[in-house]
Length: 178
Image 1: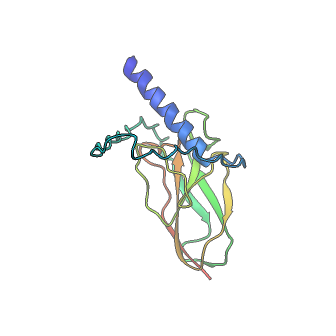
Image 2: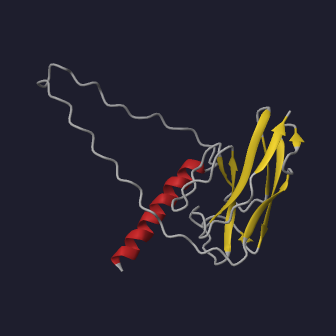
């Protein structure tokens, strides 16, 4: 029971960190606190202590994917030549698209991977320009892309942004932006 509770606590902590990093709160960043510089004459010189090793994040339990679940990019088509901004339409079969945070069987939400490979499958999907979250249950977006060739791929995440088991990912779509 303790192990399950610890895993649940770890999952909740991961979700809190993830949501804090990818929220659209629009609020400003508070200035970082800085420590006053130490006066070098206050203490005898000492060799720097080795930095403590950061713990490796623990793999989190993955939600089973529904039988026959698949994700696909409806638009743009593979090989398309487009202009920016690019409209991307998401498709899904045999899996319900719902907002993040809702733990319903047979469901999840889209993540759009731009010019990157699939992330680690036993951890929450990162949030960045390469890993875009659609935790509100969105099924399309418009993105700005520089001219050149780009790769797009969808990956479903469960209520905690962790890929399903097996992962529900689309084929990679390669486009050229003029």
